[in-house]
Amino acid sequence: MKKIFGAKKSQDPPPSIQDATDRIYKRGDTVDEKIKKLDAELARYKEQIKKTRPGPAQEAVKARAMRVLKQRKMYEGQRDMLYNQTYNLDQVAFASEGIKDAQQTMTAMKAANKELKGMMKTVKIEDIDSMQDEMMDLMDVSNEIQETLGRSYNVPDDIDEEELMGELDALEADMDFESSSVPSYLQPDKESDLDSELNLPAAPSGHAAAPNRQQEDELGLPTVPHASIRT
Image (cartoon, rainbow, N blue to C red; front, side):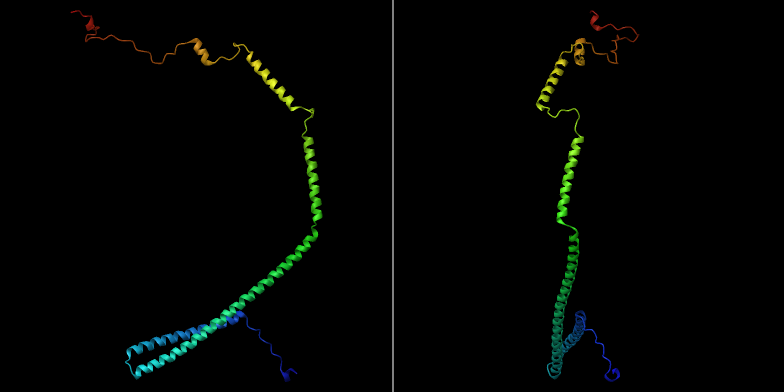
């Protein structure tokens, strides 16, 4: 049967948006190259028109320049059409990518939702509340144990703090009285009072004053003061 009717040919996959965009860009580049060539040809015709005199020769150059201008306008229209197609393809590609991102997001959220439901089955609010109550009870018991261990022995619980403060004031008064009743000769003397009572002279310095020596004359004899000589 395959020899009679032939085998079914496998169909090629349809082109993607990126393939179509690349193809259009290549066509656009080809059109741009043609426009550049026409621009160069127009520039050459302009120079020829300036150099030739008015007449049949100049009119022939102008006719060729008009033909090149028409081709240029046609290629520019094709280029604009290709640019519009690439713009539309870009919009479609952007929308397609957005849909793909949304699909991936939905898939991830479904998986997370399923996992969260499985985890919530193992955690119950009642168990958490019960555990919190047990922890509070244990903390209260621990505080009571610490207070019991830190309690002082042989100390009555009904002690009046005002009475204790009165005893403390009385003890301070007795201490002041005992310190004032000590005899003066047993109290430590101050260094300044002892120095004033003794009134001792100041200690001599290391350099003693040199005695006054009498002046001598040339022969070594003591000179007589002029005031003692009577005239």
